[in-house]
Image 1 (cartoon, rainbow, N blue to C red):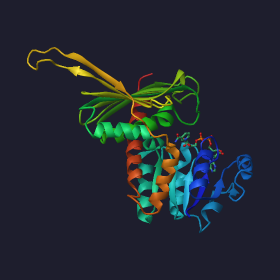
Image 2: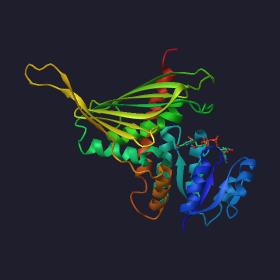
Image 3: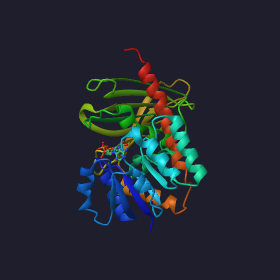
Length: 325
Ligand SMILES: NC(=O)c1ccc[n+]([C@@H]2O[C@H](COP(=O)([O-])OP(=O)(O)OC[C@H]3O[C@@H](n4cnc5c(N)ncnc54)[C@H](O)[C@@H]3O)[C@@H](O)[C@H]2O)c1
C-alpha cells in the first residue's frame, strides 16, 4: 500500500488526511504547530507525527508527500519532497510564480516522479458534466463563460482572492476551453488587509475569440459557487450550492428566422437538470493521485495543466498590481 505523509494540518489538511487514511497508508503527518499534531494523535494513533519536515522526508519507506500548507510555502516544500525522491500532491496553487511551477515540473520529470497540484474542481462530477456538454457540441459553439465565487469569508491575510479563489475557476475555465488566454486583466481592491485584494474581477480573452470573466470575493453577502457557460444552442449553469440540481441546462439561445433579413430573436425550450453523481470530489482527486503513483496515466499531465493555471494567475496578478489606484 502506498505510504503517504501529509504536511499541514490546518483547515484543509484534515480532509486530505481522512481520505488518504482510507485509501492508502497515512504513515506521517507534519505540522509546525505541536498543538495541531496533538489534536490529530488520538484520531490516527498509527500515524507518526513530527514538527520536523526533514524527519518525515528522511523515511526511506515513505512513497509520497501531500502538501497542505499556505500557498507561499508550496514551492519550497514540494521541491524538497521531490528532491527526496517522493511523489508529490501539492495543494493549489503549486507555486506562486510560473518559474517556480516550471522548476517543480522539471524536478519531477528528472526524477521520474508524479507531481499533481490539487485542483479539486476538476474532479467534481458537475464539472465533468460541463466538459461533456462542451466537448460533444451539445451547447453549440461556446461563446463565453463566467464564474461567481463569492462569500463572506474565509478572509485570508497571506493571499488575495485571485490566488485563493480564482485558482479554482481558472483551472475549470482552461479545462473546458482547452486553450490558454491571449489576453487577461484583473481589477480589485483591498479593504481589510493592506495589499491583499478581497474582491477581484478578471477578464480573459482566448485565441479562439471566446471570453471569460471571474468575480471573486470573500466580502459578499451571498455564498455563490457558480459557473455559467453560454453556447449558441444551449446554455448551462453549474451551481455547487445546489444540493440536487448542480447542473441546469437551458435550451435557450439566439435565433435568426431568415439568415438574410433576420433580426436576432431568442428561442426558449426546456430547462432540465441531469443526474450528477454524488461522489466526493476530494475522494476522486486523492484516488487519482494514487492511481498515477501506481503507473496509470500520464504522471505529469496534471502538473502541466497546473503550470498553465499559475502562468495565467501570474499574468492576472501583474495586471492587478499595475492597475491605477
Ligand atoms: N482544494 C480546496 O478546495 C482547498 C480548500 C481550502 C484550502 N486549500 C488549500 O490548502 C492549503 C492550506 O490551507 P488551510 O486553509 O488549511 O491553511 P491553514 O493556515 O489553516 O493551515 C496551514 C497549516 O500548515 C502549517 N504550516 C505552515 N507552514 C508549515 C511548514 N513550513 N511546515 C509544517 N507545517 C506548516 C500551519 O501550522 C497550519 O497548521 C492552502 O494552499 C489552500 O489554498 C484548498
